Picture 1 (cartoon, helix red, strand yellow):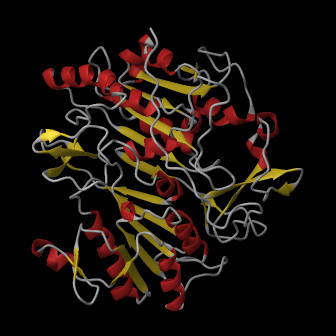
Picture 2 (cartoon, one colour):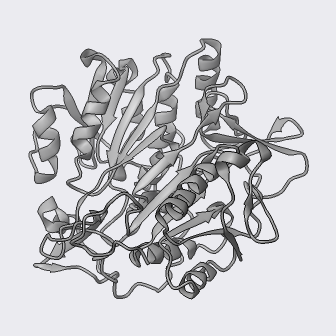
Picture 3 (cartoon, helix red, strand yellow):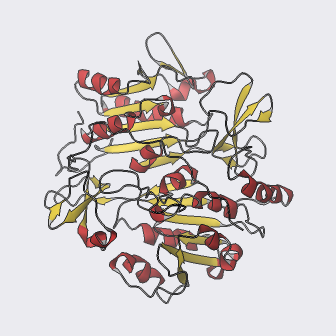
Length: 473
């Protein structure tokens, strides 16, 4: 295993234990090459034990008879060759078996995660990180339908490296993947992983992507047409992710203020109650960070998350050049679609830079998605999709607060303190009133993250899909 495992040790130059890194981007980006260069550096320069795993169906790169990655000739010198072990995409547990047979591995690469049909790959990655490995995953951020590919892995990552490619239409940086069948944009109903004769895959920007039949396409099409006609350059989407107390709000505010004049910048915080707008008049513990930076000094307001369309149609939102949204983990799943529209200029042609912040994981290690409580209510939890859509992702962390605060590992998980004890019962549910105040949470690294009772060994999680509710007239 890693040569640096002591919680009291200072981590030198080298892979940091208990870390998950993700290289992502559309087909054709150098994400595989960059990941392999990093893995090769740890092996050749520092002597760490490494291994790369790939599913048998992964066709992004060829593999020779010895299981070595064979890159395109133009990349051969810088890419080099690295050991790769093929595994069954329907049995992710093979990776655990191989790692155990190797006696533990310092650095583990998992390529082509999108081809793993066995969703236990999420728990396999969790277990590898928990044992002290430095894990690198590589997969596209979006499929051809515009849905996130394994957003659960993005939410768990300590570092996310985005690899945009030039849009095949306009040359701007692109993170979307467009499928053409016989030169025509594929219908939304086509399975994104189905092999269709005559298919071509191209990176494409938000303005030029086409998804006929998608539930949000009717809403976005006129906005795209206007952006093309008026040659609007879309704004950027920056996502700041992390647990409580990692400084997300402070970094988000500073990032927002660098993008537009003060009079064209807005600051928002969602709320599920009846407060729709106005100054911060409710000074709860969870609002302290916002109050410290926005109280009096800057114009800031709440908005009612129960009606996403009301937010989209706000005049100040439409006329701004940049705005910030905090606590995106409670935004409904309509917001990523609306943020895309606002970045392309919305209905008045003014593109916006959007900087958002949110907590990606609950204290139980699950992706934060709040199901609807009443019929007709939209589910909340847009953070996984914002991480997939974002131009850049900044993942924050703080020092682990366990082991009497002596642990020096990176803290990337929240633990709930209820009644003075750490809650480790996976089946335990709490009312909202029980969770008010961040003083009831502690931050843990994966080394000190507990096992939860009542949780299946490998939880069969549903695939997260975008949710969109058409505007009611």
